[in-house]
Length: 228
Image 1 (cartoon, rainbow, N blue to C red):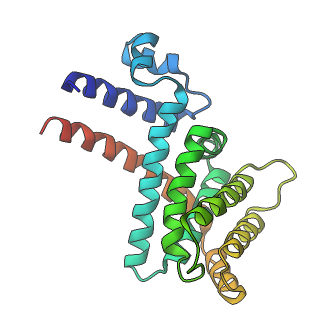
Image 2: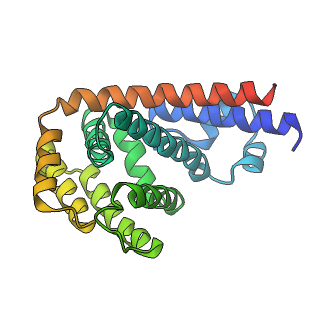
């Protein structure tokens, strides 16, 4: 693919990422992205057929960011299982604290295109995190489990006026997810207790801020690699 074509695609991803993370996915239209870039809708559709395909780029970076965070936690002596619990906790907390984060996460679980990315990514991680509790599971079983897990995650993020408090939702979601993967009761209680002792609201705000910076850095890196 010619370098100019690659450059334009990266420019679209960079601009769309910035607008979506500043204004929210639902409040960012393809027309507004085109206007910012001074290109036509037809030009945009050559690279991305729909806004969902742009969301898919962000969700892919989100999945990579979550892998990065889990590896860093594990290197600091925190188990992968606890790191996975912290991940859901920070997502739920960020969604509670920041409407833009909530809109991004909810939109990602509603879109069939991005939901498939999430499930595929999470099934791969689950095979590592829960291997000791599901030693005989096949790839298909992990894939099927993540269909249930993604539903639990969505329910945790999608709040209404009658939703339970954040700590109750986090506790219930983590318990249900770990049950799916045969995590013993004692371990489940220990991990949930550990998570709930943290300042998860502040952590959620910080992690979402770091995610925004991560996307900016990844986009800049993509440009650098294109011209080296």
